[in-house]
Every structure is written in structure tokens, then in C-alpha cells.
Image 1: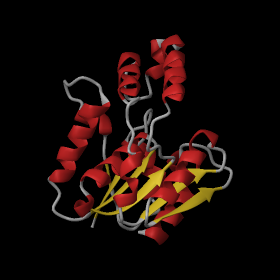
Image 2: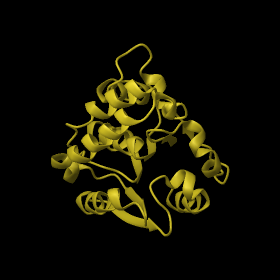
Image 3: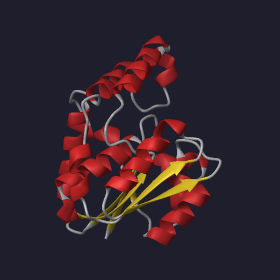
Image 4: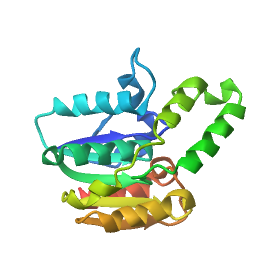
Length: 202
């Protein structure tokens, strides 16, 4: 099986370094922003690039994603269930909270451009990407996805915990685990605990 790790918005492939240092089988950590490459910065273009990449793989895939990466992993598994052996979804959403995205984008607009320097995308691109995600709703398709899935969330991630619990109940072959004391970015905030869970699960 081929393990592919997907980072969140504001992260890059290096956000997985501490996690994979504790794993025997080293996964591929993709740079999601490379899928835009002279294309408009939209979720649709991001998903198409990721889908094309996965389509070239010959082995069954184990997809592990955090936040934005979790949305991509779940979306791909729903579209191509025959290609995905297992999912590990960290702080996932399956139906994007429009009100939250609107508030988030308002905050982004008020932030100076230099505040986006470490996010991997510029201010304009981040706003365009999050705006393009408002219509995502995978909820009606969840019951048909039968591959094993582990849904993870940090104890302090109040924004995503409810969605993670609901998703774990909606997927026929999923279970939920919480990491105590951690927030949204488990790959950065609790890398050792996350690695231990991944070793056990995979």
C-alpha cells in the first residue's frame, strides 16, 4: 500500500516531519499547493490535481490528511472507493460551515499581506481558496464508503470536534479517537502521540 500524507491550509509538507520521523514506513508528504501551478487558486483545481496524481498510482492508497488535507482525502475516497484502502482523517469537515468560512475570510481580509508569508500561499490566494470551498457538501455520500477510517481530533479543537464525531458515526467502518490537550494541528501539536496512533492503525 502507498501512504500519502496531506497537510492543512497554512502548512506544507514539512509539517509532517516530526510525525514521520517516528514511522518505520515513510509516507509521501505532498505539497498541495504545487497542484495549482499557473491555475486559478480554487478547491476545484486543487482537487483535480490531487485526483490526477492519485490516479497514476498503481497500489491501493492509505490517505492521511489534516483539515484541508482531510477534506481532499475523504472527497477522493468517495469518488474512487476502489483505490483507497484506508483513511486517516484529522480535524475533518465533510460539509463546509459557510458562516465560519465567511468570518474567517473577513479576518483574512483585515490581516496584512506579510502575515501570510509562512502559509505557502499569498493573501489573495488564501481568500480565493477558502471562498471556493463554501459549497462543499459530501454528507449525502458518506454512508456508501466502506473502507476503514480513523477520525481524529484534538481535545481543544472545538470548531471541528462535532463534525469529526458526526463523520465517524456516518461512515460505516469508522472509529473516532481524541488526543487530549491538543488543538487543531495534531501533526504539529502532538506529533509523537499521532505517530503512535498511526503506527497502530496502519
